[in-house]
Image (cartoon, rainbow, N blue to C red; front, side, top):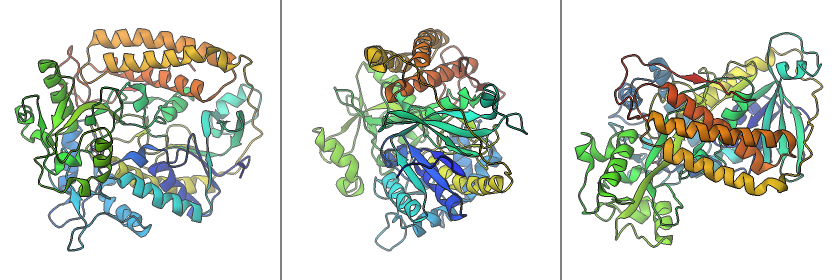
Length: 536
Ligand code: SIN
């Protein structure tokens, strides 16, 4: 199937946010298309192990979930947003169950609830350790039944907006600026296509690939943030990159996630001498919020000079392969049997708590542009996301956002316009392939070395100088070259990295995931930091 030239709603990204949103808008009878840059299941969602947090047991209540979220967020969550989102959790969980997601259950038939860092209660619903994949599979089946068009290998380059086309002489009446459509690079036909749509949802996930080591799949290149910022939107609180405390350490450098639920089931982090060390850092020890645990590991590694710490899995009182089959298989494939030996672990970039600022209906400051999931910044996560709150945020806000989009579409009179076609540059990208991959290596290493768990003004400034140089090279090349996937991804990674560093430099305090040696204390005043891109 080929895409039509226009839709009512175009969605970029096929994770839990994009699929849930599509399902809800398509059910209302609108023409919805999802475009995804790789295979449809290649999303961050698909790799989510731990689960989805919600209050579903008698011993738990909404106030406790709110309190845990606010505590983890270190004074920067929006309390009203937190309560609104968490309160709708149980209804949206029921929707998932109705779609066929079969959450793990206990022998007596009750849902089995896991525990993760920062949660005062067991409240994480999971499907063993493949929760994301189970949800993704159910949603993919549901959208196919609802007639949503889904196109793989389409990379969203940039939004087409009223402001941009007016400069090219196209008449667009009404509001100052609004969304008119998107340019997509069709990776199979190797050409750019123009798709018109009055409403666009960015559901592109995170930006973990800005770092050398990450739990994220290769698609996580911050595309939505880069696209929105090139359309003139601000991004908020981008300095809050969550480093997951436990990813498998291998000499070769490939990392994979060891879900926090492993610590929830009793595993402790130990140093080279086999001593548990987290109780030195926080009363909740191994189940302290993630920022605390990642910093503690970083400090232990620096103190001892060891390249990793270990997760003491053999001492756990569970059937490891049964509860965590995916983690088990991945470890055994690399020569470590978690039932018999501790697993070597290190932190790695995992989640962007900042993003495009949105309202609770996913709307942004640009008419017709919506954002949902990790790409958005709603105020739920504050300075440090509570584990397993992100899948919940995605389903709750996709539901609310879909209602808002349906309303928006009803109010549209003139829906689509004759849009200017894409003009390609004439330099063959292959000429510069080596430069592109070198730039990418340099970028990822710079972010890892200077914009990591412990920062300083000097390190951030160093990163900024290097990233700006890379940005100049990539932009100059972009404007002259025939575009292709590697070029487009590097362009976005450089853009987002520059925003992260600038946001970090503007925060003159340490809070949540942003820890800087030059301002080690938390400021009295909690404020959000917004940055806009310097180059379009
Ligand atoms: C994990 O399973 O540890 C990750 C879950 C999350 O990031 O919320």
